[in-house]
Image 1 (tube, rainbow, N blue to C red):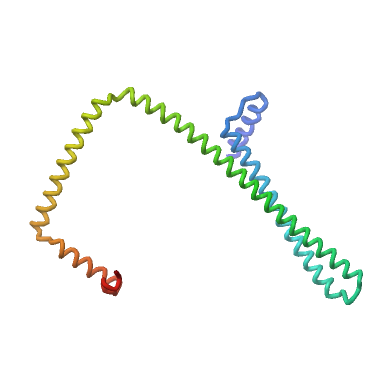
Image 2: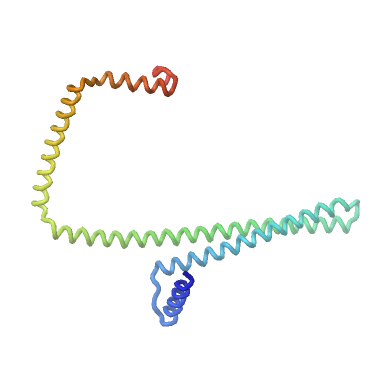
Length: 196
């Protein structure tokens, strides 16, 4: 697996060196990969900032207990509180940046899907044109009409067979409905009038 990755990296480097133009799909993959890498770095920064915030809060609580009217210690507590507020703003800013990057990734994926759809539609049109040339419409209509008539005959025959089998076996629709009602009442322990 590592060998394949090294080969792919070398191939990419050769393409870049010799000026082979990347396809939109390759470019979008590369952009998405880079964005996700940056998002992971932002996550690390967020965790570091949150850890710093917790340390500052702990120090601030500790220092606040020892103030006892000392102006210098009170100033230190205020500076720590200001640092906590700034850390909160920094964390919020990092989350906002991460959300924007995620939005860009989704837009890239959307564009990629649009390109795939356009390519598929182009191929579909080409296939339809070829099929139009191959299939002659009047012959196709005659074949479809024959098939439709045969299906109707088969449907009528199937209905007659079903009715004959029901009559021969003595199955009545009312008996089947009563049996279904019994099963429902056994499972739910309720009368059908209570359920409905």
